[in-house]
Image 1: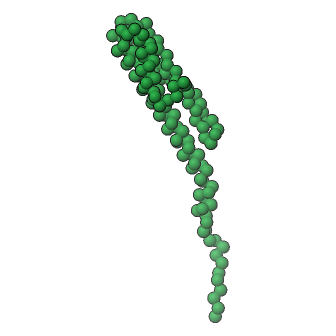
Image 2 (image 1 turned 90 degrees about the horizontal axis):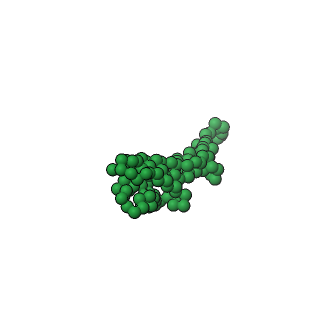
Length: 132
């Protein structure tokens, strides 16, 4: 009696590797998207904090010789991890007692996946505080 080897045509060996190879580009695309959105969110938090820091500096330095310049410097100092040439700071106030000071900070963003820009625009944060 001789043993013959039966061929199992339904062998699924290698199926998981094939599925992984098909899904890997999609998984990497999602991962890169999450990283890009995290960077944009970090920039937004920095822009919002810079606007708040600038408004606070404007309130406490109202009597300074040039309160607008002090406010812009404080705003930029609060956003050191951003490209300063792209950071926009606008200070609006009459500098009168009881008036308001408004600091608006802007910064461009771009979400790109594999070199293709998916979304771009400008991050904007405005903080208004009352002068005392």
